[in-house]
Length: 116
Length: 111
Image (cartoon, each protein chain N blue to C red):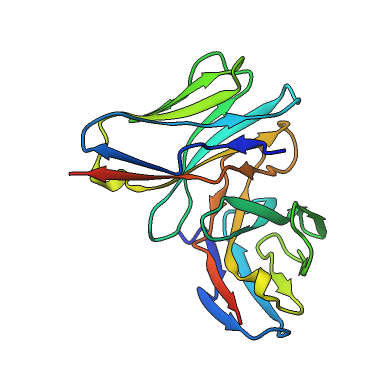
């Protein structure tokens, strides 16, 4: 069964608009963490934001925020005031448990294109 | 300020050849990982290590071997290359409950 689902293969957004990238997850472990990574065309993986399953507040990091809806098992990434440099692949990932190795499971990604 | 360094950046192998992908980190991280990324897909875990001398299988270990003789190095070995191993390989390292640091990847083509 797919543990991380990203249903948007591609998104096109005008510069300066906000964009929401969808991510749903499936786990029976009450302790888990959710991550978003950015992969520009150069290929490196860049960590953006993290949300733990017990965190009361939605995570925020600058222009990035995570809309965490635990009951719906969704962890959508919101990018405010998009910039041309935000054009990239975005991956949602999950780890189960908080101890030991971070065996991340990744979704298939969403390709975001910011239009000027 | 090197972080995680992977070599080579690119490699073309013939079917049946073998090679070792190198990975080294200078952050004294206990945990190290190898992922592969097939075209248009997310990353899948091949092997991981929780410290020197300790390794374990991930989701897609078949056709690969690893070793961890030092904290810094975590090489990935392909013994009999197959076209299905054409992929981009990422090495990563980290501490418990901290985001992973990824290398820049090795693009491998098996023909």
